[in-house]
Amino acid sequence: MFHLYLRATTFLGARLRTLGNDRGMSTIEYAFGSLAAAALAGVLYMVVNGNGVVSAIEGVITDALSNKPG
Image 1 (cartoon, rainbow, N blue to C red):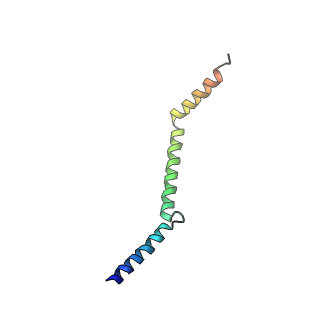
Image 2: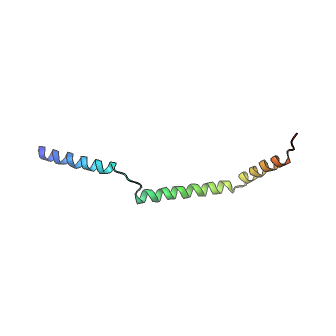
Image 3: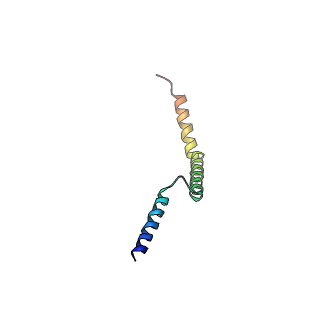
């Protein structure tokens, strides 16, 4: 019985050591990371090209150019 316990603990210890050895993203993690980055870029593109942002930037530029130093 002790022999089985020793084998199980040795196996689990070796498995935990290999799980802790993470040298980088795996393929699926890389795919999800790339997908998340592309989705964020798409959302930012839609926000920046929206009417509210464009009109706000135009307003800031117009106000800056129309104000005369006093």
